[in-house]
Image (cartoon, rainbow, N blue to C red; front, side, top):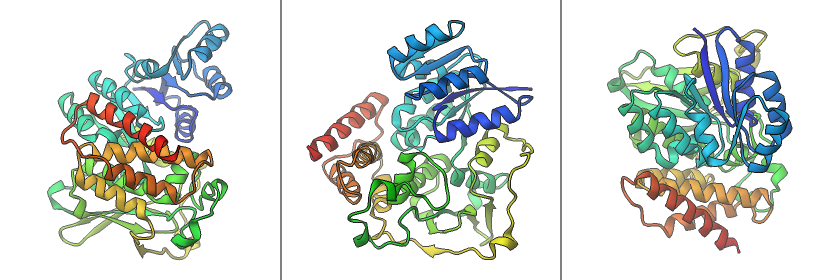
Length: 382
């Protein structure tokens, strides 16, 4: 049976790789709707490559332009367009690969339609994970992780009793600046930060990897997805990015998931689950060639953003919303060269210190806190 896929964020790094998987397995997957942002030329090519009935873009102007060129399909736009794509009536699986907390409402609407969620958008779970998991339970909808670390944990836990899990071990490459001290980061450039040693990712995620905020968001996401206490989640520096994460059990056994640093592997696993599909001409892991794997304890002083994320997770409520919104705003300012690299952490910490967390927030409260935090961070810089 062919799985019908709706895709949020089709022109981003994860989106393009998802399209590669769909294209490589036409007997298994069919793209029925997708959203894009401002990259209209790539959007046009995707429309040509995949006979989709529904496409959403960011602006009304682009929607009108595309509608004239492709009158046979429905073109929508904005936040409402994202929801229409996510909750498409013909979709079996939603791949949420859009950037930032904008993916939250579309995910909730897709869950209400009984659509399986393949989540590559960690900000959705960080911002309002309790709402997503509650809705998933209510509508009996699977949430399948696409992040390489969470896919690794998911695979390592497969068939195991959750009550027998002792600890989750999430690995981190260390990002672009893993060989620099904190003092050496004061004058790094945007281009320096975007030069990741292992992975090919979008600019925002690459900056998050350099600050280690990406790993902090992943710790919160792991807590949400697997309902494991923060005390039982460890982050380990692993430069090679070969072991994507590990699970330690009560009998001291450790199960690890290994593979080449290629996002197509966890993307395909989420789409094909519970089956595994052949990956033609894909590089195979050669451990003899790699020779050895290295591990180091995490330095939470050096990677202050990681500590801030775990602090926010422990605080709970709207504090994780503030963490994510402040980080998105600060990273945007850094990419615009309006602030220095270390200022990212400073703005996040200030936003957290100024916020009094609200427990068990509803969607409207979360969206209000999110918007307020972004505005506050902007004003801090002004």
